[in-house]
Length: 451
Image (tube, rainbow, N blue to C red):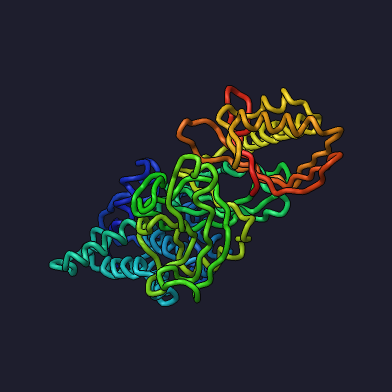
C-alpha cells in the first residue's frame, strides 16, 4: 500500500525539546511515495522474518533494542509498548505499529494516549494525519476536546523525553553516594524529565544499579516548593514514612500512597511550609495524568505504583527529588564517596578522642540542632567532655545522600547512621542524621539530630 510516513505530534513536539541531531536521526523527514516496501521490524511475538539491522538507522535500532529489553523484563510495561509502536511506525512498519497499539489498548483500556495514537495510526493509512490528535475528522470539535488533546500531547512529550534521556550512556546519580547494608533500594526523581528512577544497592564502594524507571506526574507549578498551597513539588532528600492503602484514601490517590517527611529538617530551617507530600497512584477512573497535574505530590499510574511497592521499605527508603539528576562517572562518584566518608570518620575520631578543638572546628558557624546553635553546642559539648574518662564510638549502617542544589550552591550531604556510644558514665545506641556542608574545601556539620 502506498502512503507517506506522517510524523505525528509526539515527534513534532519532541523537536521543541531535543537536539536537532538526535531527533533528525531518529525521525527522518517525510519521504515521497514509493512502491519499494519500507523495512518492518517485527515485534516480540511476531512471526515475521527479522530484517537486517543495517536496514534500520543504528540509533533507531538502539532505541528498539532498549524497548525490547524493557518488555522482556516486564511484559506489562505499557509505556514501552507505546513507544515501541511509534518506532515501528517510523521505520515503515505501519501494520505492526497498529497491531502493537491495538494490543496495548486492549490490555490497558484506560490509557487515553494510546487510544489517541492508535487512531492517528489508523488514519495514517489514508494520509489524513499531520499532528497527534489533529486531523480532518476533528474539525469543529469543542474547546474541551482541544484541552484534552493538549494534555495528552504534554504527556506524550514528557514520556518521550524521559525515555530518550536514558538511551545515552548515563552513569551514576551523584545523589546516591552510599547506601547502608539494610537499604536495598533508593528512588531518585528528575523533575525536568518527569521521571522516577529505581536504584538497587550494589554493596560497599560499588555504584548503585539502575533497575527501573517510570513516568511521573508532578505539581501544577514548576520550581521548588516553599509554601503551603503553592502547588509545587519540593526538592530535597526525603524518606518514606508510612504506607496508606487505597481502602483508607479518597479515589484521587488510586492504589495507595507513601507519605514522605516533607518538610524535613532543612526545609523547616528555611521556613518552608505545607505538608502531605506523597508518592501515590492515580484516580482509578483514569490510567495516567498530564505531567504537571498534582498539588505537589509525585504521582504514578496505579499499575506502576503497585510495582514500586516492592522497592519501598517504610522508614528506610530514601527518595531524592531534584530539578534534574546530576549524573557523574563511576570514578567521580567513588572519589566523592571516599571524601565524604573520610570527613565523617574524622568527625567520629575527634569526638571519640575528646579533641575538643578539632571536634568543634568541624561544625559550621551556621550549625543548628533541636536545642542549640553553634555557640550553645560548643558550651554543651565542653561540659560533656569534662566528665568523660573514655569514649568508644562506632558508626554502622551508614547512608550518604547528596542534597539537590541549595540556595547558596554549597555542596551538602545527608548522612544517616546508627551511632554506638560507650563511655564511663553512659552507654546507648542512636539512629542519627547529620547534614554536612562543604565550606572552603572542608566538610562541616550543619545539623545534628535523631532520624
